[in-house]
Structures are given as structure tokens and as C-alpha cells.
Image (cartoon, helix red, strand yellow):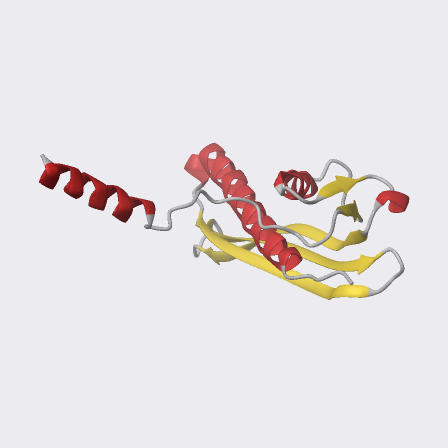
Amino acid sequence: MLHRRLLLAAAAAALAGCGFELKRAPELRFNTVQLTGFRPRSALAEELRVNINASKSTQVVDSVSQAQVIFEAINEAREKGVVASTAAGQVREMQLRTRLSFRLRTVAGKELIPATEIVLNRDMSYSESAALAKEHEEQLLYRAMQSDIVGQVMRRLASVQVL
């Protein structure tokens, strides 16, 4: 019986020390941030807002007077181009691109992150006979790239120190 208890205690200790932890938003070193420069109803801005508000220490605010830092989107774009086509001119492969240019500064104007651009590309095969399915695939790829950009922005924001 004692051997069984020792074995269970050892197993519990091993599992407790494995380091497993659910993924969570990084802790940001400023309390409030204003998001500016995004297109109206920007999905990227909304996902960024949700991720920032998910952190325990930081909230997105609407006015400059409440903000400690200002996240300024300089350019936000989705682009699509043909990569390959058949001899008959039918599109066979497309490249999807999402880009975000931004900077982070204090309300007083001190630059914390200089103008930075994040660009992501995804290649996608294309077929006229499956146009509707390919349109859906395109939207899924754009959403995945958007989430990837938000994750990269959050990691960059987490490295900023406001003095």
C-alpha cells in the first residue's frame, strides 16, 4: 500500500512540473492604449482590441486623453495577385498578401516602436470549377493571416517599456 502511494505521489509531482500552461495574452507594460488609423469596421482592429483587452493589465480606450500610448495603423491592406496561369489564360495559382504598417508612440509623441511593416503571404491554388469553394478558402486564409499579424503585434507590444 505504501509503495502504491509513493508511486502516485511521484506521478502527480511529475505531471505538476511539466510546465503545461494555457496560452494567454502577453502582459503589456502600459495601462491604456488608443487604436487609430484603421479603416471603419476593420476586422484586424477588432481582433487586436479583443487581444489587448484580454490582457490583465491593459485596456483599449477611445480618446487620447485616456490613453497612455497610441497605436497608429499607417496602412492596412489585403492584396491578391496571380502567380501562375495556363496557356489559355486561366488562373491556376494566386498569392494572397496581408500587410499592416504601424507605429506606437506615447501621447507626448515619444516613439516607442518606429514605423514597422508586417507582411504575410499565402499561395492558393485556383480552379474556375470550384470558384465558390476557393472564395471561402481565400477568406479563411485572410483570417488566419490576420490572426498571425495580431499575434506578432501583441508580442512586439509586450516588449515595449513605457517610462
